[in-house]
Image (tube, rainbow, N blue to C red; front, top):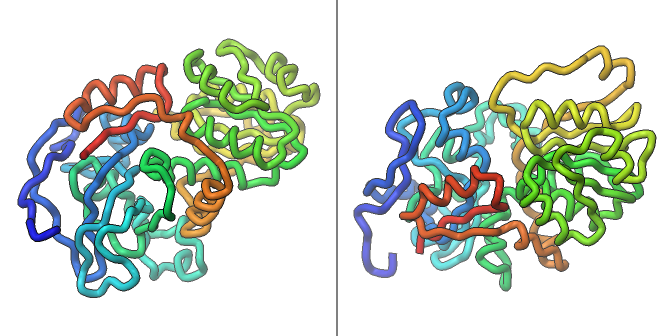
Length: 348
């Protein structure tokens, strides 16, 4: 590391089950033969991180502690393992947070995003809310020249948006997006860019709906809008062709089910914090399709994200706040307030 080797680093830490995080000095990890050590520059706070902070039902059933959380980042390589090829110190990189086995039937068929032995960075193993992180070289994405650090820091959630928005063709169709968080807003931007006939975004936060005004062709519905108002906003009286449920709120899923047309296709990316019930008879008789989406196709989605950004897509409007890492309590409170888009932590 430029002739010096840090022994400890600041890190956000969850020592055991329960709400909260603490800032600690942790040992700097060392890369193995097929790993790289990354100096973290910027990290994004994701909805998953809020689940972990609050220790809700999902976190209790999914998270392994003790843990350094976090999975969205941009950084620079400072050390490579002896077996690493094609990567070098000083490269600006992002990290694919799904650590896949490479051996199971899904991985061997090219569907790494469906790995049967997947380990999630910052959920099952130490993540990026620290000054340094070690990851497998296979999970490193090298950013192209000219990508702003702020945009590079959100390639992970932008990849989620691309994955969701491209699950079904949207050109010439009407799209409803429930949840105007950063991923929902970026998905709206992508759907508009891909030629959707109409795109409507709804959320309970008026602040987030204001952010949607940055996407010229996307009307944002009022927080209290029902299915009829949403259909009117989208000029689609029979219902929306495509629905992207990005919030995880049970109420939003029901709004989505009411607003899509017979034969409509719904992509569900949001993570509910509690059990959700739906009317399966209605889904069956109206012949609706619901598909879950998580993460990114590896590495196809990363390539798509890079191509979109290189061709002028600018998702930076979703970034509303940046805090120093030692201001993490204020940063997490801001991210949870509903009056923010993407919130970043600066580790420089």
